[in-house]
Length: 470
Ligand SMILES: Cc1cc2nc3c(=O)[nH]c(=O)nc-3n(C[C@H](O)[C@H](O)[C@H](O)COP(=O)(O)OP(=O)(O)OC[C@H]3O[C@@H](n4cnc5c(N)ncnc54)[C@H](O)[C@@H]3O)c2cc1C
View 1 (cartoon, rainbow, N blue to C red):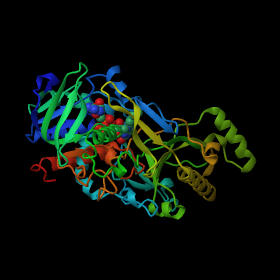
View 2 (tube, helix red, strand yellow; view 1 turned 180 degrees about the horizontal axis):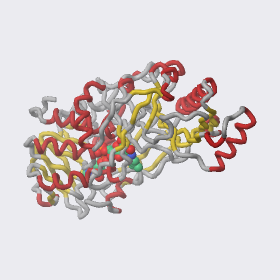
View 3 (cartoon, rainbow, N blue to C red; view 1 turned 90 degrees about the vertical axis):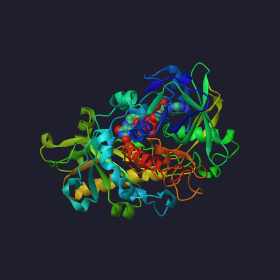
View 4 (cartoon, helix red, strand yellow; view 1 turned 90 degrees about the horizontal axis):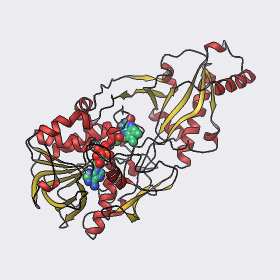
């Protein structure tokens, strides 16, 4: 049911207090309430977008160009599911493993730990995954596997789950209620403080607390909370805010001209990713790639002119043109990080600063892949590839990111390499858990929400166990 923050007494108690009503928070709240737990779900925004809530998401971006931080996430009921695109795909097995160069990119869990939650995740996200493994051009020699990405409707968590949030008697949803402080005694959270937009606040007590405030905000809350609690909240903060990851996109890496018709080509939901063999051979990062959308006439005409100079081409009318699109892994690097800035929001909490930089390694992956594809096309007389000058000059496609905010409160075996353990519990706190992509130890090259929901369902199971027994 929906209730006002001020309807609570100071010291009101719940079995579980969840902060943030986006896909992660709503999923955990529903599971626990259905299991008979008394759940408080606090959401900083209201039912619809508002300037006063959205303002809290403002921050500074350092280094590479990025869209403003209050544009790339939404701060109201349903969170960023109010404008996500719906691409759904589970993490690929090798993304959990780490690499020689980035051994700390490995997760303390494996794909098989999340697989049992796949069916329920598909129901929640309204997608049906198909176990469909094929190779680009249907040829195993290409070393590129077809990985079919499914597209959700896309599910809007506010619309889909509104009635359940309203009618479940164990679930209390408080809108316009912002977490502004967490208090710890050094071992567990003893209270959380929430404030509305009229300066009214309440202290809440719960057996367990879950932060589900999105990939960037989970970091901000812990960074601020750790300062307020004089380092007792995150006792080893070495990695806090660090190893932040995104997915750089490039919609127009190259124009591809295919002389032969290929049945897998030019369908936007068919993505390919490299096999481990290919990655090792060229020492490249993970990526997904796709041939989509016809280039505009002027690009096609210029390309045909060039093609005529370099090769004898069959009937021009039968050439199939498309753009080459890529979606790239960004390995966890300590220098990509979230910190607290000097300016504060309306609650006096420092705004975030995001430092995010694409390096040589990402550009090299794109360039090598374009070369590899071009050579493959020439060898097999399939077509030709015209690579964008940006790729050779190592320039990003302006503003092209997945808007997937991963890392900063990463999952690890020990507090030396992360902030939460394999059960998403903050190291050193018995009753504080993190939900969402900030716990990702590596970002892989697939969209994160499918994995976020799998992890949320797994966490909801942990939370049903007796207090502190995770
Ligand atoms: C344009 C766009 C397209 C995208 N497309 C895709 C896609 O195709 N596939 C995919 O997998 N992902 C996509 N994403 C990412 C996807 O939206 C996120 O992965 C997903 O929403 C994360 O869910 P979450 O619950 O962890 O966080 P969020 O959705 O960010 O929800 C966090 C919630 O916490 C609340 N909150 C924040 N701070 C506080 C506070 N202090 N107190 C109380 N409440 C608070 C917020 O209001 C919000 O409701 C896209 C994102 C964008 C921006």
